[in-house]
Length: 150
Image (cartoon, rainbow, N blue to C red; front, side, top):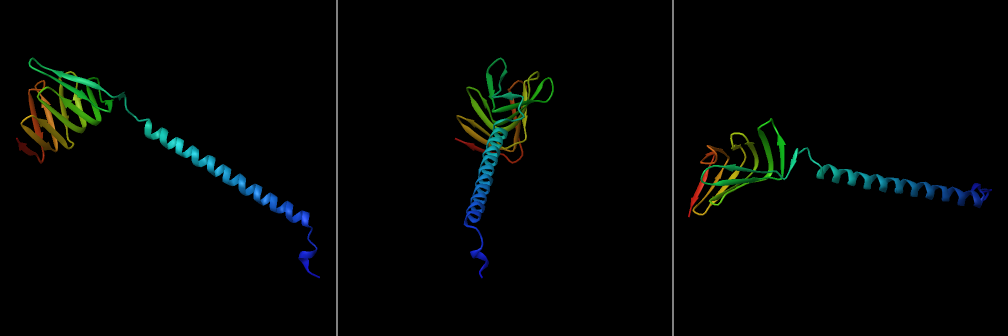
């Protein structure tokens, strides 16, 4: 006689229902875990180690003001601030854009070793870094620099 003919139909239905139920529970927990990982990753991306969010500073001298903005900033010491992401120096005469700058609030100087772009009415300068000193009266460009005069 065949073995499968002796198995109770209720047992097969119950066993199948238990397997389907366990399968659904596993899928449910995997989905919850996936959603939690997405939320955690978004939180990590949105939160940063920045001390200052969207910092704003200025360099003041007798003839002009240079406004400095960035997306993030971190204090290095009492006077120095590391500005990160979309750093912009803007005055009536020119603007400079770069990604990282160390700004000294006391001496009102700034230095960068990242790719920078200086724009004015008559010139555009692309360089590997710059140094602003003498309260914004002197700007020195470093590295490979390209000057376009208009």
